[in-house]
Amino acid sequence: MNNTRWVLIGLAMSLLLTSHPVLAHHGFANFQMDQTSTIKGSVVDYELINPHVQITLKVEQEGGKSVEWNVEGVSLNMMVRAGFKKDSLKAGDIVSVTGHPGKNGKPVLLLMKIMLADGRVLSAPYE
Amino acid sequence: MRRRFWGVVTTALAIVFSPSFLVTVAGAPQAAKSKDSDQQRDLSGVWFTQGNVRANFAFEGGAPFLPWGEERVKAGPQRDTLVVLCIPPGVPRVWTEPYPFEIIMLPQRVLIVYEYQHLIRQIYTDGRDHPKDLIPTYMGNSVGKWEGNTLVVDTIGFNDKTWIDGTKHPHSDALHLVERIQRVGHDVLKVDITIDDPKTYTKPWTAQRIFDLKPGWEISEQVCEENNTYLFPPGDAKGEK
Image (spheres, rainbow over the protein chains, first blue to last red):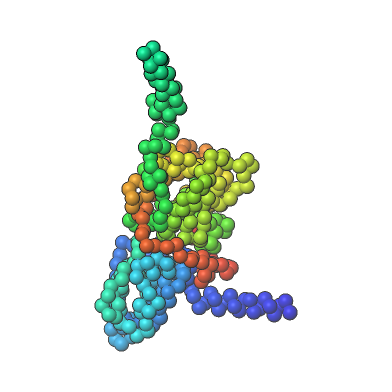
């Protein structure tokens, strides 16, 4: 019984760790704060969550390939104060994001500002 | 006529030796109290960092470390120092967190409610001193008194598990903080911090933070544990704070 329980706990942990690989409390150390990049793509996913708001964008590349970018905001409360709402983005919206690229070379961006599908621009609450 | 003379003399003596007259002449605290109105001593409101968020209490010349302090920096964060595990950041690091806080004025206490981790500091302003034999805590024990319109907060009773700021300036359980909190304008709050830790630093050093009033903001729910992968071992927290 005990073994079964530990196996289940282990499986649950594995699922949690793999389903949200980027979620953890951290500062800006993982980003190149002196660099900015702008990407444009369609929204795959938008999560207004703690500890950091997450946006997944599908960005088309030359040659027809596409890459999924992870755009990260700051904490839920501060993003809400900056004007982000539950329905600010929905899957399929074409948006443009400017932010600080990651240091690890992966397609990640720390959000500075985003132009929503309706043309409104929302900015990060702080840097 | 003679009676009137002695009446004037008696009245004059009564005024000269009255407590209020003596206090006014001596410039004693009561005089300051009448000058600093309740409005000037009202720190209440929701406040947020002015300008960019900075994790470091930067100061010229670097921290005046004793050898223990340098060794502590080299040792790096230990598991029980990690705010990524939702362990309290301690004071004064809590002032560097990118979340607002609310100051609530009570007759005998000032409460600081930090949105970050929903930490609450109780600063007793009823004249009491720190309790004897304090059990060390992350946020310490605070008492306050007014100097003019500045709330002077004295805090001791810390454990040694937190950092002074987000850039790993260490401290020991001998940390003694003095925070001078002043509303320098209706919309601006200044916090001057003196960090005195004779076990870690050769001399006291200071830091300052400025905060803006945020009318209309409310302290919201903040659940540190939510979606926090570091809660699940063996989360590699090396290099984190």
